[in-house]
Image (cartoon, rainbow, N blue to C red):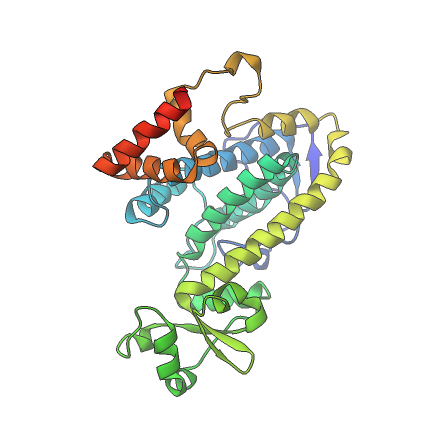
Length: 324
């Protein structure tokens, strides 16, 4: 990416460069190719902050609601609409506005890679929020769009034909939880090399035949997310190696430093915060500091607004141990 010194923020910033719609055929991507656009420093900062707002909203919703629930999806969809983030394929040919949104999505992701590759904690936080965002967007795709996206991304996950589905009907039904013969026609199955689906093969969740695993549509996302996590983790490690070169640019170093300390909570390493935790910090701290039992109790309390008798007793015992 090249940056100009223009600090004037346009009311409707439109990225420069050739407008080739084939560069962004889908509303989501694996972010494999870095952007080559010329943007101003003001756009650089604006795009990054807007994406951070989205990732922070995803984190907060994941604490307040069960991920994937109706309430969670509804709240996240409203937030993405408010921030004009492309999360669903358009019903008509791609317009200039949709194209600009997708390019902003592409560029902002790579900007945050530079800011959030600086430490293990930052990388972990960034990967988790990006995975949750990717999962939500993937679930918005129709079956036809899923197959197109898989082919475009170079993933060898091929949807099997109706004839092949009937041929292995009994095996597919017995290996898929909750599947009956009446629902078989509605289910999509993907043929995947078994070594690419070991997480599903090991617990015997899929049907195996001649070195291939037959993955139902409900489970294919597990494989895609693992692939997304692996690629992003490697990309962040590579970005960390080149970070000294980027930070040597006096224009970018302050911006990246500011971004890496934004929207992920306060720094609790300083002396002034020792022993002081406010109520608004509890949700964030519970996810990484509570033991597993208390983490589940806290999650249940946030979702149902009450605890059963056994949960209250366990919570009181934990509080006493902390006080001692």
